[in-house]
Length: 102
View 1 (cartoon, rainbow, N blue to C red):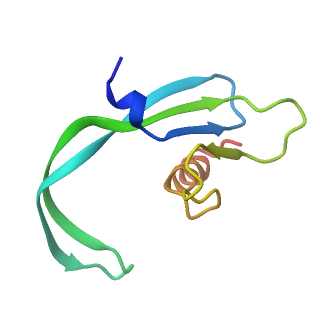
View 2: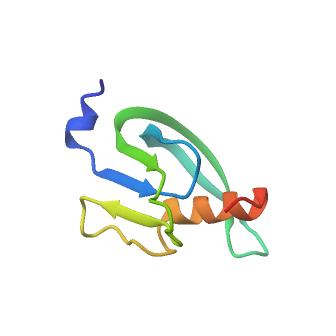
């Protein structure tokens, strides 16, 4: 078990899927970060060197009850957005678009 699990924000994503999955998402410390150039899509190409640390988020992905039509993000930190601006929801939506899964 990680020490960080005791002080991390606990994020639970309930998603329509066949399996449950628990993950620890470690934080990183950027030792070096340089913006190389701005891309046409508005994002930036970066050069970075980072180190993963034990601080992070415990995440649990769980099947929603039958009949559910939407995903639900639950988080113990009230300052974390629960809408499509959340990176977890963005990643889930991208995964679904790329794989065609529901």
